Image 1 (cartoon, rainbow, N blue to C red):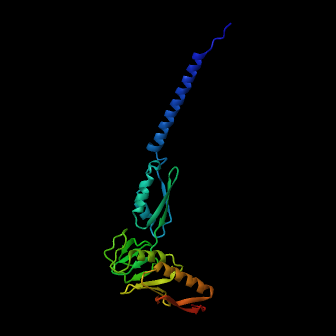
Image 2: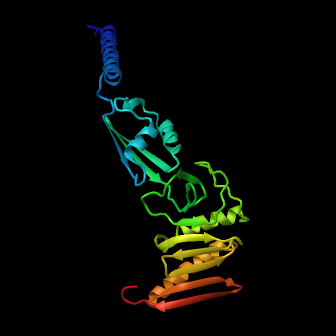
Image 3: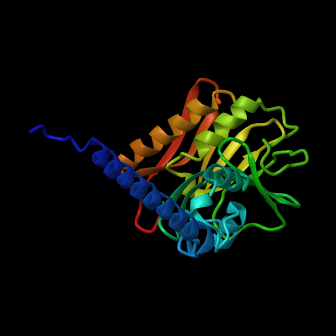
Length: 258
């Protein structure tokens, strides 16, 4: 007897399986749609912020544009980064989604390097960008600079001044002074009528840097002198770069209580 192949039956079974699989996929799609769009399962309930030392959390959230209740699935990360970086103090942003309902914003703030003292207090970063303009000094420490003759400052723009100082030299100064190991000891930075520079450290130490020319070298040299004196148990009282090719260092031994 010949065996009869059940090809048609097999095809029907496969067709049935495909139909069931498609139905399941459609069902899952519908369920997923309702989870995302019609329920609060993926609604943002918490936004955590880290790295904000100067900026309050509420301000960061305001600039981010994220609202509690927004769908975490529809979050536009590029737009949020652009929003946040429009705040002058925000250098960079990292966004992390913690499914199903939590967002973490990790920000890096720009550093105030100097504040120009006058009728308004103009805060500058290490690139010469105006970070803020305020009526009074802020509660946290920033060295004050005197003698910088500003034109009208614009927040988020490079500072403009009328002093006869090359822009690149001034930028090198800002970048270098913010990296000094003695930065936290700076009490005041003075620019005189000849556009010569003095940095005062408290009331007992001063560095006379002269013109802004070769300012990067001078700041590095100041740092090296300070480290060398510290190893010997000494500190400088005055470092003078204005004597031609010579650097004059007046030093003293560190005494208890100094």
